Image (cartoon, rainbow, N blue to C red; front, top):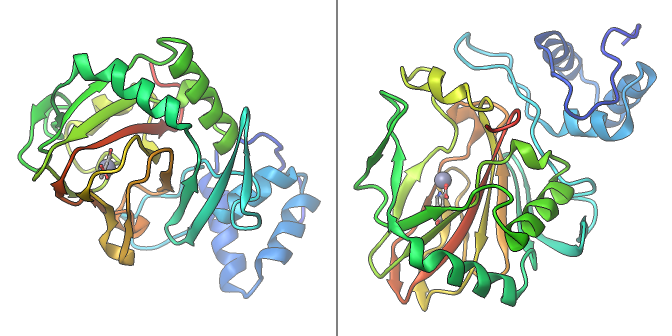
Length: 286
Ligand code: PD2
Ligand code: ZN
């Protein structure tokens, strides 16, 4: 990179199409991650922002594949087991690169899991999903759980967890949707789906007005069902078994199946499964 056109130290910068094209060209020309990192830093990028950019899958492909968006990713994930999460240290016990995915151990304490369940239990109702045709909400046979949403920053416990997630992922707390708690009883499941909003659907434009695309998902496990209930990723043949306090994090820089983030909640066989999900948007979620 020969000039300062792409210089920026801000993690929340726009990854412009020009930057994506430059990256794709450099990769096609055979430059490796270390050389690209050096070029970006020479052009004025901060170390963290440059690593962040390079961690994103870049596809300049068929016309209907969207350009990559910036996504959250913990500093040092894939390099160290222990990750800094503000008031807590978290271990990344599984790391995938494509899709960018981490299984995290110890994100929540047992007491926090129990407190979330206790606060959510009286407020549960049949889960709704976003109706992609209208942008409204509907019940859905593919999602046979019960759920509720906390307001962002609703109480001290919710704030503490949101600030921790922000510190871990390097992503503003305001870009998060309110925490959703779900309970699955025996037989309940969430069939495989993508969490981003499909740009081709008519309801998507109105959904995107509240903070842009979803770019990442953090599913936190609040208990251990007696059997079943894994979070499954069919594209990469991965099953994450729920364990109280653990979490699975994955990002999708492109709202398209090239993200390889198809995922579902396998049927619970016995016992209950409780999770809390934090979806992260491009911008402030209002
Ligand atoms: O409960 C799960 O494992 C699960 C599976 C798929 C949760 C979500 N998606 C979600 O909250 O988006
Ligand atoms: Zn999902």
